[in-house]
Amino acid sequence: MEFLLDPNIWIAFAMLTALEIVLGIDNIVFISILVGRVPAQQRDLARRLGLGFAMVTRVLLLLSLSWVMGLTTDLFSLFDQGISGRDIVLLAGGLFLLYKASHEIFIEVEARDEHPSAIAATAKASAGMFWGVIGQIAVIDIVFSLDSVITAVGMVDQIGVMIAAVLASVAVMLFAAKPIGEFVDRHPSVKVLALSFLVMVGMALTAEAFDMHVPKGYIYAAMAFSLVVESLNIRARNKRLALAGKTAEAD
Image (cartoon, rainbow, N blue to C red; front, side, top):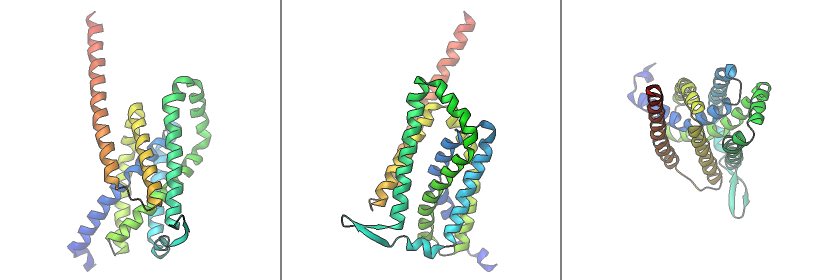
């Protein structure tokens, strides 16, 4: 138990937990978008299962570090570009995110206005597709977890610290996922911004597969700026609605 008194252990734990939370933002956004497709009474369960898969995936990958690090070894070359197992996973995950986010944007922007009855039917049918949504979450969890675990290995040597940081970060994400998901559902414009964020993440994952690193800080900064602007728009709209209500009462 002496290692618990080592300040370096606690510093590494705090830094890695914070990093895991930051890297989990895109995971929370993706889960929030997909969970919105299931019936309201099943959404809490879907969130818990989704984040539970994320936690289990990260822990299993940490317990098989030799295999994970082996994924960085080139399997073959394509146009003089070495392709590793990690590259294949990132490419598949990036393309999946691009497809899924683009499809959801189409539904929100085009199909909802042109065919509202079809959207209602889709939402009703999604009651029987609960496990399909969970399956999609599980697939993308593998992609996000792989990147997260490789980053963790580069920061900390102790496997126990890594697992503790993963558990702590998932606990924080579990607490934050519901309010974030509800906020996104209440504001369609924010949902479109979140989907655009996933498009950027998909592009970054695809680029990463070809060794073109795009720092996530740039993506997060762009998303944060967009959210600040949209929050000002939401506040302005609420003020106009309140003013219009008072005017109507006065008349």
